Length: 281
Image (tube, rainbow, N blue to C red; front, side, top):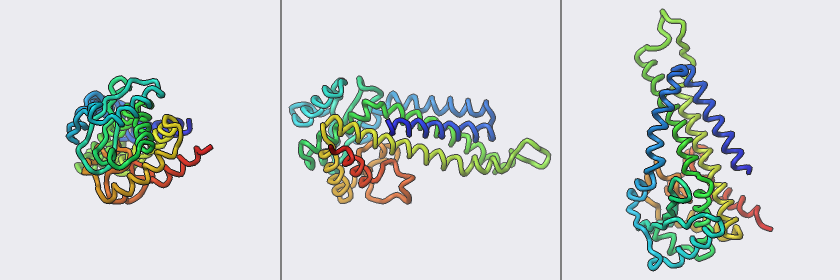
């Protein structure tokens, strides 16, 4: 419940940034146009992103004969969660990682790398797959899409402000309606604030999926142990992921550290494990 409340508060903050900056730069009409454009772009992404991301990582559907252990675990967890069993895809990569995609539980896909299937034991794999089903249950793909739509609208309005400042379209000598300070905030501060809030929403949903994964698996130990292993091995064998899809994976697929944790799509592994261990007893 705490993660959902935090997510809703962050959404309100994101919408407030859009309203304040949009109103200062482009007025109500500008806000509406920017939001409609970003919604159209992200609506397409919502419906077709699963196919695009699976194709980007050369993922192929994994049959039950090829991976009976994975299929059995997903079937058990899906039954516990009272959702249809998702399709399972294999990513041909030695880096251990996994993600879930799909617009709803009826069209969900869980993708696992060769590396994660080889690295984890059954209990650890159950925790990871439970985490991914947690994203499906909580409809985190939809949440991420809406957050991206609002953030995109803010970026669009900020771009208008920057071009206005460059070409003197706002706040000229003979105009009293332009506010250079508001434009400066829109051009610099608003996109940064939108990015920070969007990343915070992503981190909140990771915590929520961790909690759901531990619940579905019946204990937090498998997922906690899996996260330790994934962090260690991923540093040695990084996954060549695109920045646009990095947030989808259970652990950040890059070896480099963020400049600040605020700009990361994933919470620190240590904090995730600590929160999982609070579930003991």
